[in-house]
Each structure stands twice: as structure tokens, then as C-alpha cells.
Length: 558
Image 1 (tube, rainbow, N blue to C red):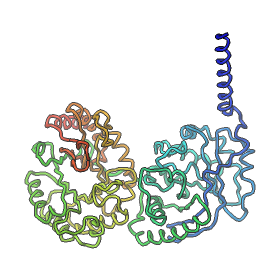
Image 2 (image 1 turned 90 degrees about the vertical axis):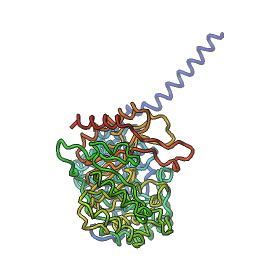
Image 3 (image 1 turned 90 degrees about the horizontal axis):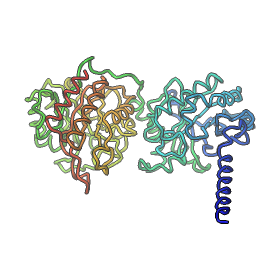
């Protein structure tokens, strides 16, 4: 009896499992499995407004009939035709199309959605303009949908395939690229040739659940910053919102105010940006090798050609910057000068350092700094208010309004205008959303990024550090709209000496392979312990022998 009962229970479990499996997966093999309803309510946003800065910064609302559908490789004509019935005759169409299953990016790029896309495009009306918006909000760092927070390269490959497939099937279709406008938007830009219009969204479910960046203080600021994040792409921008009429009405007022504010800064905010391969170092030349080395453990090496100085206001006021600078020059080295506009000896508030810079409060100090630099013929790489984009408050110029930062950067660099040995360096960490703070190609000669192996301060195991190449690839991709040579003004790795040496040898392979990197400066010291709380600050210091191994690796890869 006991055996029969066990066999009966096992049979019931097996039967239930087969039923569930059949219900879940059999639809993949039926051509009409998605034929009942393809309408998708998740992206049924309302139109807030339309801006085309190529004509003007005025906001208009010409009106679109918006529907959203979910597409699968085996979606047939019948449900698509049903979804397209009843379109408003007096409005153009915005059609949001989302891929309805996991792994869709790869499937799209491989052509598995082509038949469904061709069917859809064949049914689109020819009597009105149609915007096709595919897999929106891709850059938001959540995974609410299968295409979100994936590799930018994978998303771009799939998007470009969709655009080309749809244009071949329906040449009149307008392709809309539609990020949310979240930090990191530009990383997913698929290219000017496959985009006709941009859509940004507000109050979407993906952004509401995202926690990677702090919320903006109000809707007007949020809209303004979203528009700024599309400043590298000179395309018409549509703004869409999830919510009721009262929300949309309020957003229309905010959008006009945000657009007007951006228009006032348009001369330098909306420059012409084209992605080009930056000019790099000559063939077979090594990157300019430098160190930040206050203890001067490595500065005597014949391979060191540049030294890094961090300078705050009091250093300039007391003359210590001039003394340190002159000492570096006497050693026959070029200089990186990272200007930190705080710690003012004249008791002016550090909390307002960017505004103070714009107002000229520190002009006396900055002019003194540039006078010191101008007395030499040595190339000096001047980096102002670095790592501004990280959403923390380690420095008083971090987590500030990007337009205020840009104005401060431009004001500072204007004070050194005409000094021939000054090389203007814009120095983000290279983190997500960096380009929102880009001050413009006319005031930047080099882009600087920081590469430290430690991905998170709570990780204490040195072996869990990321490789130099992985970090470089990610950060260099983010800098592509700047199209400027890269100077890695800070990099370092912690851990046992053998681990450091191996990490640096691998770094040398990356550096020699990328001629757009004109210089690399090692941070040969422990970090500031005050910002690490109860956790010991990482020590990036290396020995002379490890440094020499790194140099030999660079030379062998030439």
C-alpha cells in the first residue's frame, strides 16, 4: 500500500509538472499564440511637448496618437491589424514597440524578429507620419524589462537592426530612440544615421523604482537635466509622461520653463558634437608616464616624465603651490595640476565654491596659479574640480547642478587663456552620466579619467578588483562624445605586491593598444582615510621593482 501511495503521488506531481510546462512553453511553437491581444499598457504615456532646437527652443504640442504594442517573433498580422484600427485621422502616430520576452536583444540582432517587424511595418498607414519607438527606457539601471540595463553595445546592435529592417519595409517610417533621459543616456546612443527623433520619458515606472542616483528636487529641474542629457544628439525631442491630465498639464508649464532656461545657455551647452577617433600619440610612442608621489619614492626613476600636484586655495594663498611646482620643474618633469577650489584661507564658504568661481571670488588665486605656470615652458596639464559627476559629497563641487559646474569650469579656463604651455584637462571619474558635465570642446584639450581596481569600498579581497582593461573600456566608451585624447591622471591597485605587479602588467597591454591614451599617472599613496569611515583606506602604493616591471611591460608592447 505504501509503495502504491508513493507511486500515485509521484504520478500526480509528474502530471502537474507536464501541464505547467505545456502551458508555459507550448505557446512558443504556435504561430498564433500571441494573436489575441498585442496592446501593451506599460508604455501608454501621454505627450507633454515637442522641441526642435535646430529651429528654435520653443515648445509645441502638435499631438500624436500613441499606442504601445508587445511584439514576439511569431506575432501575426491579425492582432497587429486589430491594434492599429481606430487611429485618430487628424493626428500622426507614435507606435511604441517592445520586445516581449527574455533574451530579445540577441534575438532581434540575429533577425528572429524580422518577419514580425516586416508584418508590422507593412500594416502602418501611409497617410500620416509614423514614429516607431522601440524598447524605451533602456538606460535606467533596473531590470524591469528584458532590454534594460544591458550592454550598450548589445542594445545598439539590436536597435540598429530594427531601424534598418523597418526602414527597408517602410521607407517613410520615422525611427525614435527613446531613453528615459536618466544619467548615462548617451551610452546607449545608436548613431545619427538610424535615429530621426528622440523621445524622453518622465514619471515612468522604471525610473520610479531606480535608486542609483538621487531624485531631482522638482519636475522643472528633472526636465531640464533630461534635455541636457540629449544635447549631443541634434534631433527633435518628444517628451512623454506616465500619468493623468493634471500631471501632464503641470509638466507642460515646467517644460517651457526648462527649455527657456537651456536656451539661455545654448551657445556653449549645445555645441556641435560628432563622435570621432581622438588624435592620439605617435605610432610606437609610449604614453607619458607620471606619478602622484608625495613621498618621492618613484620620482627619481628615469621613466617618470610628469608629476601630479593637488592644489587647493590655501596652497596658492600661502605660496606652497609655487614652491612645489618649481621643485617639480627643477626635476625636469612636466606637471599635472589638479585644482581643488576649496579650503579657502580667507574663510569664504566652501559650500558655494562653484558659484564663487563663476562670480570671480577666487580670481586672484587662480590668476596667481596661472602666472606661476606661465613662467615656464614645461607643458602643464591643468585639471579643474575633478570627479564632479559622482553623486556623493566628498568634494563640495560634487552633486551640484551640471550647468553651474560647466560655467565655473569655463570661467576658470578663461583666466588661463593665451598661456601656451597650459593644457586644459576635464577630469571626471568616468562614471555613469559623466558627459552631462562636459564643458565643451573649445575649453578642453584632454579628457582625464580615473582607474582604480577597487570597484566598491566594502570589498576587502584584492582579488575581487576589476582589471584595468575592463574599467578602461567602460569609461572610455562614456567619453566618446568628447572625441578628445585621454590622459589617465589617476590609476592604482591595492593588494600584495605580486598581485599589483600582475594587474599593472595587464594594464600595460591596454595602454599600449590604445593610442588615444597620451598619458597615465600612477597614484602612489594610500587614499584619504577620512572618507573611508571604519574601513581602512586602500593603499595604492607600489615598490620600485613593481613600477619597473610595469615600465618593462609597456616597452615590450610597443
